[in-house]
Amino acid sequence: AIIEPRNKLPRHAGAGGMKTLYLTDLDGTLLNSSALLSDFSREALASLLRRGMMFSYATARSVHSAQKALNGFMPEHPAIVYNGAMAVEPRTLNILHLERFSPDEAACIREILSGYGLSPLVYGFVEGKERVSYIQGPAHPGVAHYLASRSGDARLRPVADQAQLYAGDAFYFTLIGDQADLRGAHQALLALNPGRVT
Image (cartoon, rainbow, N blue to C red; front, top):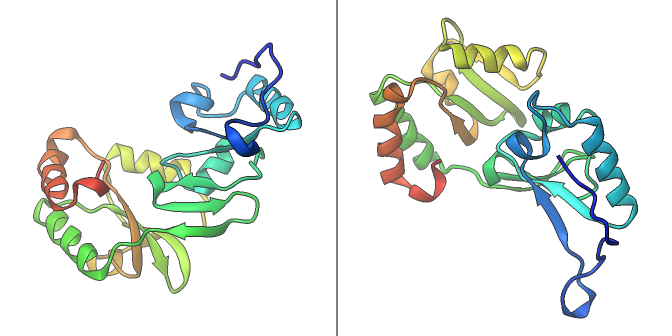
């Protein structure tokens, strides 16, 4: 929740009149227990924005999922999504910055995950469109929940095999499963590139 301060919000900070941009996480921070922006928080944010506050968010969500959770509330300033892999303008969906995996990095990740019998959700650009690729068929309950919660999302791309799963230009991988099943792959990926694995 956001609590509006009693004192007038400072419009500038530091020398030279530089403004401050306030960033917030979404899940567990700005959003309520239903993973939505409450009416109270919406009204408080609107009041602060009218008074000149610069505001946006940084989240592990995609901009599409973030917009759904914020229910129409879209910051004017760029947002950070996919755990920092992408910076985007929420109102236009214009991508300002994107960190991609090189083909060699993606191949190495594929080799590690396949070695542990794991199939991730692969976020990437396939034929120029942002897609979320996944192996169609029986899935972990967490994956099933993820897909059901995004029913109708045009990015979803069910595929039949590993070759199709890793097609395109990948920038983000997500594994959903039991900790015991994921631990080995997690350690191997951390050793591969500790700065890009969470």
